[in-house]
Image (cartoon, rainbow, N blue to C red; front, side):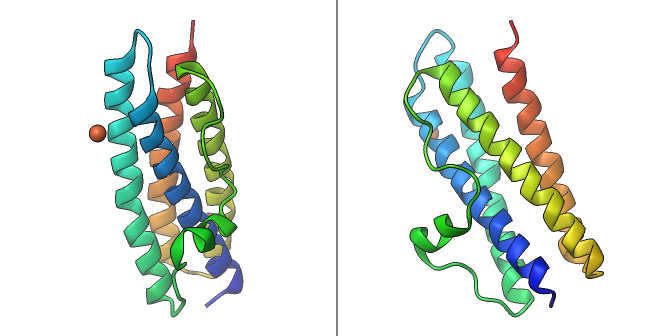
Length: 146
Ligand SMILES: [Fe+2]
């Protein structure tokens, strides 16, 4: 298995987990006049993100690698920042947006690594994840349009 694919897949997994936790935090803590809509949207997004974690970790195992163990191990691979910073709904949305931008960057690198290694199943899985992150990015960006 390509070392590049292994490392890239770990980063994608860590970023997905970090975004899931950050998005669930937003689901819990968001306040303001759009509370109901944002609470629901963040709820749908964190569920998708958490669901994606397991297949990514199991792909690593299928490739003969160990999955990260524990939160510290996971966080070490993430390029998405932990937490949402301080602020209300708009600041939370911006923090999540930045996280998805970082996740997309890592995903594109991972897709390229999988393509170079002729690892089609990993590439296919990652392309599916890219589609989901881009969809979430669209929704978060739309919330900020005035
Ligand atoms: Fe909930």
